[in-house]
Length: 166
Ligand code: S3P
Image (tube, rainbow, N blue to C red; front, top):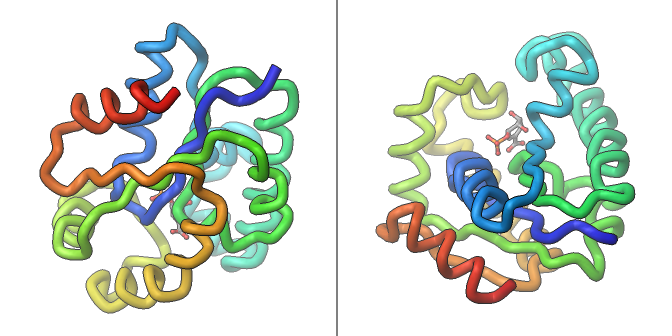
């Protein structure tokens, strides 16, 4: 028994929306690491960043992901920075990991429109997104077995592309 699909990618790439839909089509459970972190800690993501900074958040994130993967056979979406943690990258080895790839302009559009507060993107989201992508791109590619592009494709098309691979 192991996870059916894991979604990684930049903030705003649509990991949770795609993951939830893939899980529904497969008739299986869906988990999202940010939601699990908030449930487990009883704090919001911005509060966790405020209390322990990014490194405090990453420690909690890595532990929650390890636990979420353990004996799980549903679908899991990860926060955009989860791949920064080495133990998480190691835990993803051998699993069907999908990178959702979205062009920078489209990411910016989605992130600025979204109501989700992302502490790392509060100041100058355009610059921050560029920096985060530069820092993470190779890590996404390292963990991903498949890459699906989601620039202009509606969610249903991305979901269909994922299901075709599974
Ligand atoms: C983060 C992305 C967020 C959340 C946190 C940090 C990041 O998740 O985990 O704000 O480092 O890119 P999403 O990718 O779902 O926005």
